[in-house]
Length: 248
Image (cartoon, rainbow, N blue to C red; front, side, top):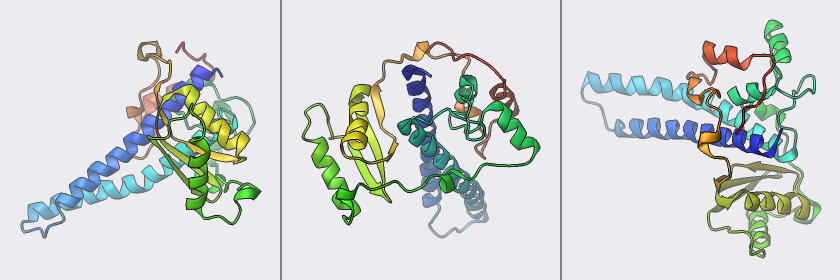
């Protein structure tokens, strides 16, 4: 898989993640507006109608975000696009449809027939290894040292970069101007500082992938229903056995 293809799929993952969180925020805002004591039955009914989808989104949205974050981790360590069952590459067209896919087409069909399933992403993602020199430090102290290290290099702008650290895993969020800057940050964290697991959620303002170059055949993410699964049309396309990655 080329660097441009990975960037394209990474942007799909980040866009989907932002979309889920935005839906949660909108529903939370709607619920907040109805928090005042309801006087009329109509208001009570409206409140109940919002509560049900919010509860579903909270559970399913959390699972999908975990899948997306797991895919982003795989991109960082170089395991993205490899089937977790047989070890073969997952067809690019399947990744276009389901960028967090963990099984190739054949294995996914076998799992479906046998009614098997992979462990949840949250169960699969193991805590990262904290380098010896940072053992015993608090999460806040580790984050401070990371910022301090990055700010010593003039090639890195940390103004819009948000870093957190939990259980040996570094989480990156925010925006950067170039892909080269993002790659350099990952290199510093993994090669120079020795961290093994990084969840990279950084958006890049200029990726070099123009929107008119992206394949029009790639399924829209809106094809997902409220459970985070694809409808039948998109599902069938995602399960095509072979297909080349369209020019991007």
